[in-house]
Amino acid sequence: MAYYLAQASGLLNSAFPWSMNFVLSATESESAISALFNTAIRGVFTDTELTAYIPSTVEMTETSVSTASATFKQTTKTTVTATTAGTGTSVGLPYQVSEILTFRTSFATKWGRGRCYFPPLGVNALAAGGFTILVAAQDALQHAWNGYFTAVGATYQHVILHKKATAGGARAAYTTDTVAFADIPSTFAVQTRRADKLVPSRVSVTV
Image (cartoon, rainbow, N blue to C red):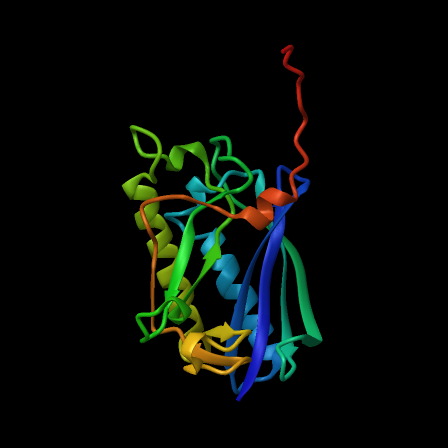
């Protein structure tokens, strides 16, 4: 069994970076996992139900899979460069606003779950009254991610990585638990790491 560090990344509005990161476990080679991951994750972007909610200004430009060391650092790395964009005509939500996919293991603890942040959807993904996601857009995300997990099958599994020992010592540092369930909430989240990359322009207020 080997562990792999997988990433899908791209650009918002042709300039602002975004990424989604995953830890995978598999017995297949790095090149085999890279090929499958690239196809499956791009399939989320091109899903027939979801693509209209992804603005055309949101692009996936690269996927990569790296074999992890014992401390889950990158070693060898396989990269696939290609542009896959949404087809939505609505303008995008703010750079840092994300819909999340929550990963859950069989443990109902804080350390028993994880998440990934999808790039911003379009304003057409907002519910009629604003503030939350449109039910149809949430269902489209569900359809796309179901397609992803169907595509990868049992070739690889997603795992939650514990970089530090958990409280109470239930898990040691650099151990993993297998993801057993996943879900998509009806609310949006802010990815602070993505927001930190944005340098805003400012206007002065006279006091």
